[in-house]
Every structure is written in structure tokens, then in C-alpha cells.
Length: 237
Image 1 (spheres, rainbow, N blue to C red):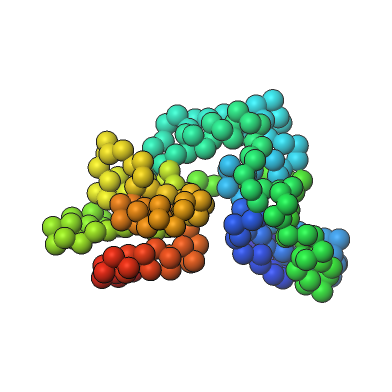
Image 2: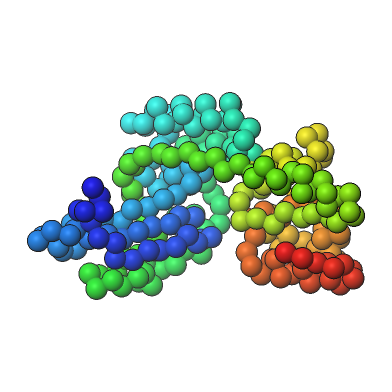
């Protein structure tokens, strides 16, 4: 129904700064003007509370959603560190002080938005109307665990490099055998930002020992491969 009523004009792809993906749509009917246009925004639960109006808190008009997030924290281990993420989200009233959140100096200025012929669409979208919440589970393929075990027996070191958050990445690594269930992953799992904060020699050491890199960008992948090759490792991706 929405596709019949609205036409997509442009997409603002997910970015590390905005922490969201947006689609700008205009009405398909005779009253096709900017007044009826809508921006549909998809954003993770960690960054939801401070971007909707009114803000999402335990005493907000959506206490059921707040409770749902808390339930997700306490009952699910399939999403990695959703417990820590959601508890921080709830206790902070939905406000997250991570770089790149709304209001951060790294946000692109609204004047640098996307022009779609109906005015400038700013890349920062706040004061959103909450429409719905969707949970997704993307389990590893069945053959992955046995493939990793075959690699281990063959002397091949397997490293996961993903754009997903660190907690989820570590949980998947445990599930597929890159990490054991009880293994301490200190010094063996890094986010792209944590990797950037290391001195060059510490980065080299991390590439010798780590088996999981999360929230990475293409530049991180290239650097990791370069370090591995500097150890005379044969690297495949």
C-alpha cells in the first residue's frame, strides 16, 4: 500500500556518522508536493531513544517498548552484547554519547544534504515519529562450523572481519568455533575504532593474535591484510 501511495525519490545509505539509513518519498497522487513528503528512517535500537519525539524513556508514552528492550536484554544471547547495549540505552534514557550521534560535531551540516528537486534533504534526521520495531536473526549457514574445523585441522587461521557490532561478532565466533564458549577474547577481538587507537606495533601484534574484527571499514581490511602479509602469511579473503 505504501508503495502505491508514495514514490521513492532518493536513499541516504547507512553511514557510520548518522548510524541510520533513510529513504525520502513523495506522494504519487495529484497533491504531489514537498508538504506531503516523508522521510522513512531505519535506526538501531541503541540510537533510537534520542532521535524520536518525545524521547524514549521508562516514563515515556512508549513504556511497552522500553520493557520490550529490557526483556530482550535479559532473555537473548543470540544477539551478542544486546544485554549491555540495551541496558546502557535504557539507563541513559536512550541517549548515547558515541561520536557521530545526532548533535556530534562529526555530523554533516544540514546544508550539505541531498537535493531531490523538492528542497534539501538533510542527512541528520531527528524528532522522528516512532512507527515500529523489527527484530532480525541471521544465523550462520550450517556448513560454516564444519568448514572452520577443517581449516583449523589444516593449519589455517580463520579471522572474522565484519561490520557488525563487537558483541554480536564475538557471539557468532563462539557459535561457529572461532572462539570457544568460555574463551577470554581480551586482545583477540577489536572494533575498527579500538584498532585505530593502537600504536602501529600494537596493531601488528593484534593482527598476530586477534581472530575477530568488528565495526570495520574497507580501510581496516586492507591494513589487516598488509600486516598479515608482512608476517609472510598467505592471506585469502
